[in-house]
Image (cartoon, rainbow, N blue to C red; front, side, top):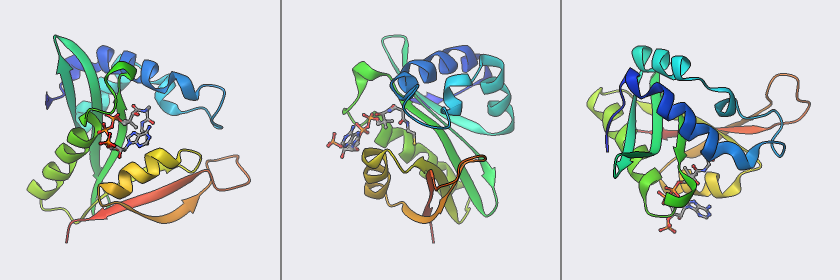
Length: 152
Ligand SMILES: CC(C)(COP(=O)(O)OP(=O)(O)OC[C@H]1O[C@@H](n2cnc3c(N)ncnc32)[C@H](O)[C@@H]1OP(=O)(O)O)[C@@H](O)C(=O)NCCC(=O)NCCS
């Protein structure tokens, strides 16, 4: 695992498209990760930071974060389908928590779809707890939880 750099933008965007492909047509609204572009990711890495997991020269995992409120916001967590259930996401999330602790911020926040209970359980196992259920713009019912891991 290493720090992501803006030059990783295209590879991270391709990884996100592959990792989120199974949600296309199933989640409303469509996940924003499916519309990410290399330049968009590169710009996010200039404003914030990220980690990538590599295996044999192939990018197999990614996560991005940026300062928000009293802490960091974690997003774009993805692991390539053939590389799942090996602890890569756990290590990537761990890198965000370590960066947040190093920066002495109070919390890490993320959004997770209510329709993805496995993801919710994964984040709970990493110390995150839901604090609110919210609706994406244009939706008439809650579609995601805001989850927070406090670092106090
Ligand atoms: C969610 C995702 C990032 C998990 O990546 P991963 O590398 O497979 O996760 P890990 O191997 O680190 O999993 C750690 C633990 O989380 C839990 N977990 C992860 N994925 C799970 C699943 N599909 N079902 C049940 N439990 C799961 C397990 O407890 C697992 O530990 P175990 O394998 O020892 O039982 C990956 O499935 C993915 O890229 N999904 C598509 C994109 C996505 O949903 N991103 C997150 C948006 S909020």
